Amino acid sequence: MTTAIDGLASGLNTTAIINSLMSVEALPQTQLKTKLASNQTLISTLQSLNTKLTSLKDLSLAGSATGALNLFTATSSAASVTAKTTTAATAGSVDLTVTQLAQTQVNVTAAMASWPTDGGAPAKLTIVDSTGKTTEIAPAGTSLDDVVSAINAASGGAQAVKVPAGNGTYRLQLTASQSGAAGAFTVYQGTAAHVAGGTAIDLMADPTAAVVRTAQDAKATLYAGTAAAQVLTSGSNTFADVLPGVSVTATAVTAGPVTITVASDVPGITKKAEDLVTSVNDVLSFVSMYSAVSKGTNSSGASVPKAGILTGNSTVRAVNDQVLAALSRPIDGKSPAEYGINITKDGNFTFDSAKFSAALTADPAAAQSAVQALAARVADAANAGADPYTGSVSSLIKGRESETRDLGNRIADWDQRLATRRATLQAVYTNMEVLLGGLQSQSAWLSGQISSLPQQSTGE
Image (cartoon, rainbow, N blue to C red; front, side):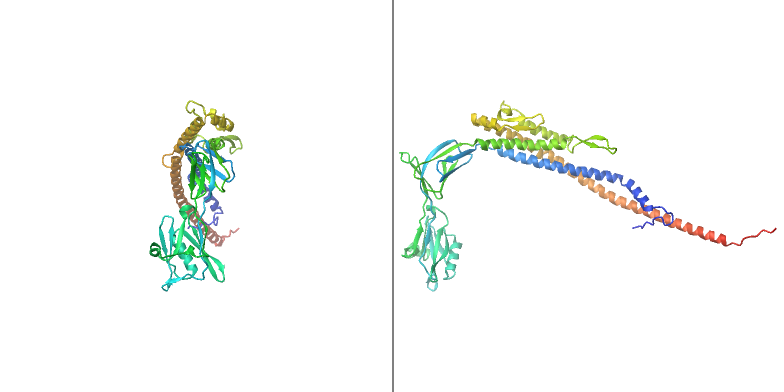
């Protein structure tokens, strides 16, 4: 790198001169950097808009799905019985009496200090589940820990744990892997062949062993005490499809019939419609905020209008108009205002929950259909902008990103060009100082030579 010699001979501030010249040389690069920064800001803003459009699309698609607004609530006349609904439910009620809760089988063996042997090896044991399937288990040793590990690793329908029984002995407690009658099991000392042959030892046959809790299903009766009485069973304490799309869970046996009532979830459906309006407003407000023209000042301090980053962007304006139209256009010949969705003079929407609830109560099917149709239109409009492959905003982002990469490459090229130009200027001014210094040295030598010449005297 050429080293500048500041004013050594000329007295000039050559570094300042070079910097001034380089500022002029760098004007094209400065313009590129300004454009790059503007592009990066625009890309960031468009990406934020795209995120909002994607959220709007996802919410709208969910709201337009079949049965998405088929929401119901289920209430029970008893605290020990609760009910849940799905979109397959319909309004109605039913009485049922819970007569039995589900139980998970628990067995405990007689107390033992170690597991018995058979022919010198740890005796095998066999678990038989409710279907008759046998699982033969071979413990690694006679330690009860070995037996517990072997049972749990076998996945034979029961899990084991050893429980202290005093005097250094333990019981094996075996718990069914599933609740209800389907979880019933028996456990034997012996192989599966011994079980089949009737020679295996039932571990519960010992007088000090016990079935602590038997396997049983939960039971409930519909229309109890009538000729139409119908018994429901469940391996858990939850009865599925007591009514279409309605499941009932019991925590206690009931003394009499419990009434389950299913009704349309007006607040829940209203919230879905309100969320749609809120999400649309989120997109419209974002576009409005970044398209607004504000007041700024010029270099002389005078007030001038300042455009927003999205002002005049035709792609963004088109997406904004599509989303606006999707929610404001009539649906089935009716204005959205009839369902509480009102457009304002500012270009966004308000939602009248009371009016929507009234419309929903008066004609549930029509109100739900209208909201779903609006949601479908909004989803299409949002997707037209946000689709990662064909969306107009996504495509605009890709185009700007490509331009940004090109600007970055051009700025890098200018870095090299300017570095070369600076080196050239530094070399020129350094050489000038060296030449000027040489001339000054010659001048000083000549002056010395002249002053050393003898002076000619003049006579009178």
